Image (cartoon, rainbow, N blue to C red; front, top):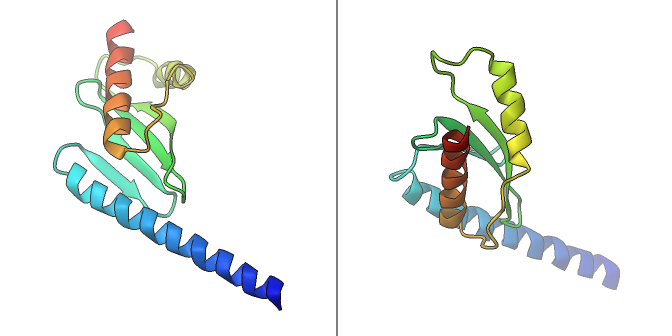
Length: 124
């Protein structure tokens, strides 16, 4: 009986934590949508950011604990792109170069990802 009670308490604690993370995330998204072109996919828990001058769609994965991870970069096609597969391969390779911020602040993550994507396009 004690084990069942402890398991129930752990489940309740997990659900409360997840609800708090989601509430904070939704508040951040509401505020940040005024500043950045972002889209939230709640089913996959993916945040898509179209970076400023870079014309790159960055995808962040958001865990239920509130941790972020850059999981994808996609070049938004322009007329001068000859082979989209080459561009996709180059971006997948560059994904490994991203240094994640230590913070769990969505603001800081968006700034870092935006700067990273701008750097990719400037260095070729």
